Length: 265
Image: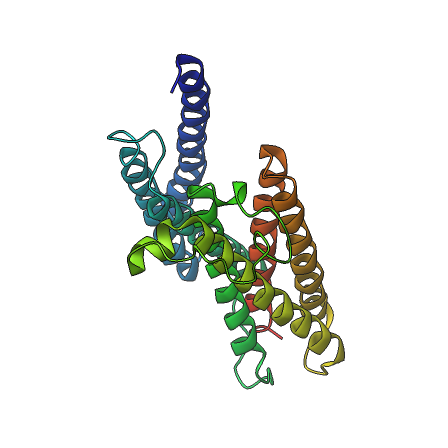
């Protein structure tokens, strides 16, 4: 790594850490004020305490990730990158869930018909989250720089160099394997999302916001898949990769909102 390259990653890292600390302060200060004034409902106190703990844990995991790039390598371990991103997205989903709880007030009495929507929305949320983790492994291995054709991978449906020696070496460190897994699971996410959208538009159990969110996840999933293909074919330029990652965050947020909303018909 040249001195210029180090300066570049230094400022990215420094800014990332500073924003993390500012976000922590923006959460902790009002939280403590609300507690002292006793103006926060008890049902939200424990949720915010969990959010605070997740934020602190995220900082520790971030250092654990960075540490893997300080010895014998100039990039972080892909599995640690996926862990750091995965925890960030858990915090992100929990923030959305808690915000919707705070905005909507106490839950209504049970007994309202929801059909199988809470289960379906929960499954879809888990699928999107797993896809985000697979995307982190792709990024950590720079797997977007190989097999830049679609729908095949270097002319093959199943890449001949898929295996990485060991099971862990394959799922976490094999560049063809991480890209293949991300592709295949992405197809499953899109199919499920389109099914959710179609069912939502025709379901008598979903109304208003729930129906709108069901349609939104279908549209966003298709758009996100198109962004993924475009990023791959363009050989993973940074700006397009960032748009693709932002799309993943938007889709995950919509899936979280849908999973919450169908439990409050």
